[in-house]
Each structure stands twice: as C-alpha cells, then as structure tokens.
Length: 100
Image 1: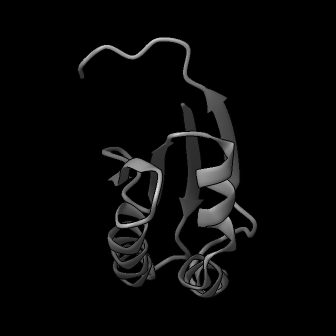
Image 2: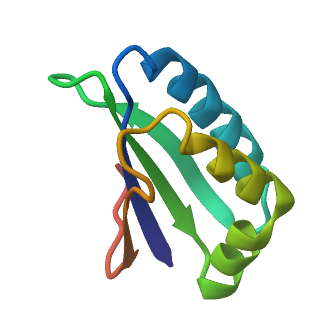
C-alpha cells in the first residue's frame, strides 16, 4: 500500500477557490480503481494551507491516478490558486496500518 501527501498553500484570498478544486479532485480520485482513501485537510493554524492525503493499493493504481484525465486537468488548474507550484509531494510505502 502507498500513501501520498501533497501540501499546498493558497494565494492570499484564494483558499475558497482552492478548496472547491480540491473537493472536486477528492470526489474523482475516490472513485478511481485502487484508491483506498483520498481526503483534503485544512491546517487549523494557517487556513491557507491544504493537505491532500491518498492511500493506494500500489504503484500501478497511483500511476493510473496520475495519468487520468481528471487528475491532469484539475492539477493544471491548481497553479492558478497556489503560492508555489508544484506543491510539496511525498510518497510513502505503508509499513503498518491499524484502524484509525
């Protein structure tokens, strides 16, 4: 199982637009083959910072996600609303996963 973390900081005054875009990405990503979980989280202290977290059955599922038309289209739009593109993205191999 793989986990992805993507951290974005919205441009001043753009967090609402970035959240709308992130919600659309979450909706489409959750329906993808091999997606176990996909969510968007807003920083409590700095509300302009968002974190997208995904869990995938494996590398093939993640690559299919990255190559999908909806992902490419939505990610292309992120650059209009974030301070820095591309965002900070991390990929982890899940060693152990208990119920959260």
